[in-house]
Length: 358
Image (cartoon, rainbow, N blue to C red):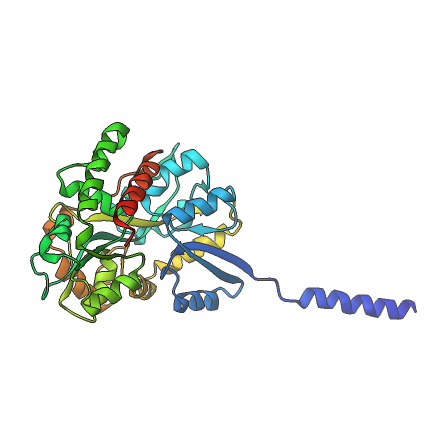
């Protein structure tokens, strides 16, 4: 009996020793197309002890999800550069990065320093750049060759033939078009409300020009490719993708400047797979992976030579859209102070109610 128990114990010990370790899970909260299946599989092949789980989201939802859990539930998040400073101060949902674990040398220096400046709190850096791009106008040059400004979307010549997304980007773009500087008014909420009211009046008066508001890239793309609309407010990445199908569809930086964003890497405060997160960050900075990622996102990686690493069709689209002057005229989104998004949300609801939501 003693001998039998000893053998059973030995077998049990052997099983415990040889059983494979349970895979670590890297939970990524990111934008649609920012974790293409090809890259996820490649990463998991290189790091078989890590399983990647992806939740697609947007800026507002990322903040809401992390607020609801006090920064738990995810190990890596990708908010835009202007959605971190005030959010962190108010809700404490992120934790500082260890830059020594990130290959920052691969990043475009100006974008890296810009994001660090925007996301440094008490000497600690909370984000580094990943992808960048702009919001502006997409037009079919064959059908609407004179579109050059945000306000042109409301030109009666294009009645029923334009579109826009009913989110804060169109508020900001139209404010610049009307001669205002919304970012400069962030420190004076009363002044900012005056600007929002002017923009709301403009966009309500513009309702007959709109075929529909778009909510995602797929419905916008369908309207543009079918000719239902001839121009729209858009992310440049959507326009770049459509350029590959119809070279008449191009991105137009508005004459007041395209609105520029940088999506980042940030660590949620309650995440428990930091090392896996750093491995993913460095993995997607590798040149061959940059090209795969940009093919999926349509955006430009925040690495040195990011435009050159785009797939050929998207590189051609970027070069067709931007001149050096256009690049120098970019309006980078400013950090959003508390209260601003509530004001914008009420303005958007006012516009939606007055236009029927179309």
